[in-house]
Image (cartoon, rainbow, N blue to C red; front, side, top):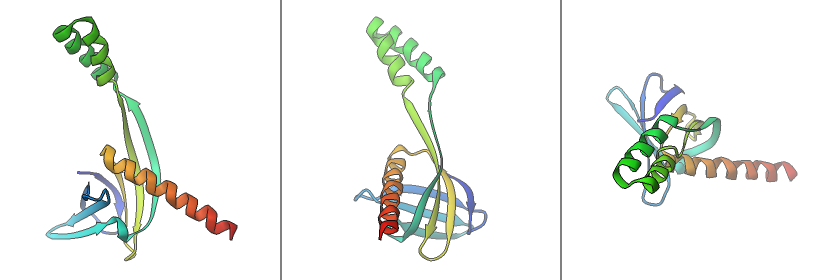
Length: 131
């Protein structure tokens, strides 16, 4: 479940996922009521913050486990796998019905889709400014 920062729904829970076509879908739950949105209902998407980091502890654990199981080459592979990049990003999404939500996303697949949406939206805004 994603962490909600602020929303027009008040205190709510959020789940995100991808449809078979690679489109983002949301389920916002407040009490017993669930509101569903898909990517076609987004009016705008803004990236608020992004954090990319490597986990030193997981790199060390991966190196130890890889070294014990397979020897020297496993040590290197375990360190590389355990210390791979991770990204957490926060987004502000305005829906076409006037609602909004700001939340933090950790799902790498959803972040990739949002990064493309933000980039596409920036290009469209620049093209509109030139007209």
